Length: 290
Image (cartoon, rainbow, N blue to C red; front, side, top):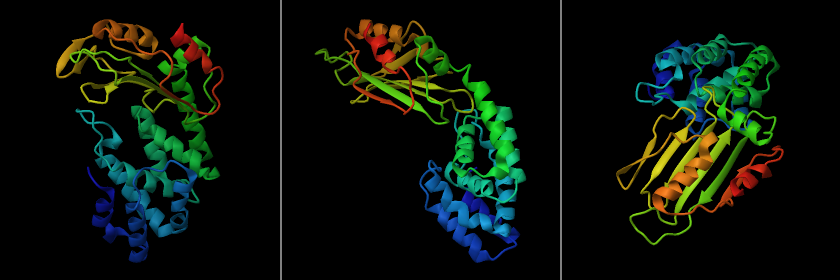
């Protein structure tokens, strides 16, 4: 549907408070370049949460925008056509409200019902704002993700290996492997990387990404929990694989790539990151080296 702040401007006549307060609010939101990720970001909305007329206006307009923006869901092409930054800052100011706002409840219920991937952003805001007024909604959100997480690929894979992820709502792991060099320019170069990312699941259950890439951009492909493509393109040539890569078959995928291109991936991490709180994370490196 496009930019939310333009939508608010069109509805300005419905604002019952001082127009300067609304202008100040929209100008502030317009300065942000991404959705809130820390409590420092969310606290930018605290001063505005004291304005009852502004809260009432945002409550109604965000609900209408949410409905007319396909409830923040993907379209038939897999795109989300909504203003992610402004939407979640407006949601934030409602979560700082002194009472439960019906739009917060509405968006939560609708996104849970559709298993919207961006539900993780809503969860993050509940954590960052820590407003006891929303204790019930916070608990419902945590229960949703608790039920979701146990069945996701990343949790099952880590459990099989004997690795325990952190008790956190936003943990992540990343490890990258690099292909050793080859002199054949028709094959993958020594600048090829296989990157595996695991994370606390998004609202739709997505929990990992496998990325195959090179510095020359001859190949740039990503697979996740829901991928169905058992192929990728290298220099516009379609490369057929034996199966769709996933977190459980990452070792087989490595071997298949080595066979196709007559290369060898170094099994030691070229780069790695594990959020604080992982237990026995060294098992993953040992598993790759076995």
